[in-house]
Image 1 (spheres, rainbow, N blue to C red):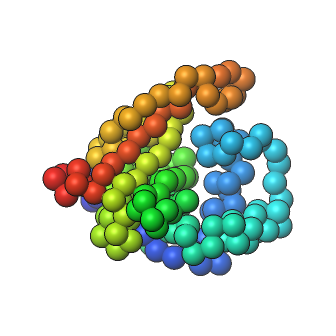
Image 2 (image 1 turned 90 degrees about the vertical axis):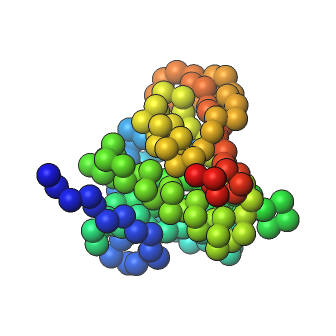
Length: 176
C-alpha cells in the first residue's frame, strides 16, 4: 500500500509558474474557475494577469501553492477578504492527476485552518458548479455545508448549470 502523500501549503516560487500557467489555461475546467469566457492565453498574458490580481486584491488575497511531496500541484486562495465582517471566499485548482485522491480536501482543510486561526476569520464560503460532484464532496469532507443554489446561473461547456453555494463557520470548524 502506497503511503499517504504529504500535502502542504507554501508560497509561490518562480519554479511553480509552469504548473500554475498550465492550470490557468486548462480548457476542460475553465468555467469552474472563471466567470470570463474561455480564450487562449500566452505565458506573458498569464504573468501580467498574476501581477494585476496582486494589484486588485492587494494584501487581502492570500494564495498558497498546494505542494504534494515537494511538487507544486495546484493553488488555493482566500479571495475578497472582508476584514470588518471577517469572511472570505475560497478557491482551489489542482492538476488533473492529483484530483480524486484526497489532496484537494487536505489542501482546503489547511486553508480553512489558516483562515480561522491565523486570519481570525469567522466564515468562509465558496461556489461550485453543481455537476462537479467530486469537488462538492471534497468541500463537504472539509466541513463546508450547502447554503443554497443558484439555478442555471453559469454557462458551462454549452449549457446552463446551477451554482452550489457552500460555507463553513469558525464555530463549525472547531467542533469538527
